[in-house]
Image (cartoon, rainbow, N blue to C red; front, side, top):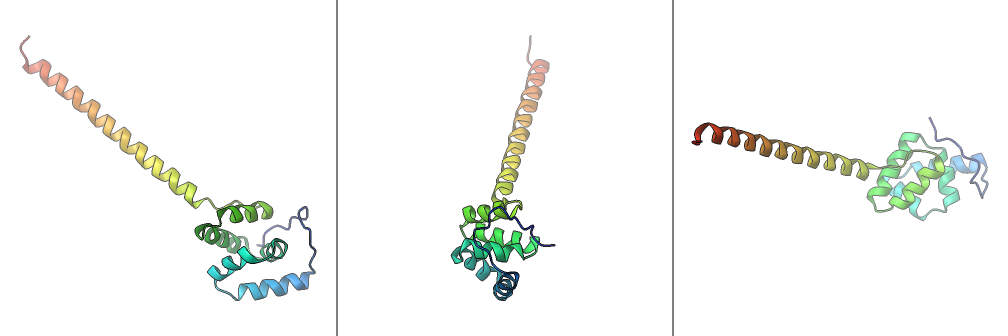
Length: 128
């Protein structure tokens, strides 16, 4: 499956043979080098190449761009291509927040339970 071709944001037009040739040359590089190339290629050319790559490959490239510190550019490509932007960092942050919340709830439950046990025991063993 290839990324959908959005026709509303094309300022430069390339022939299909030019785009396919550029894509074939682009795909000969390793993934990290492809991501680096995306940061220096003209936006119209890179969009043409990305539109002719598989969605999974584009998502992987966007993830690598984000890891290399080009998250804004990755989000821009995702927006222009109509794919979901990579949010690995957001997901990790949400999971860490959930873990921290669970720890707080567990600790508070233990504190309240301990207070209840201590209160009950003091009621039983302290003279009235």
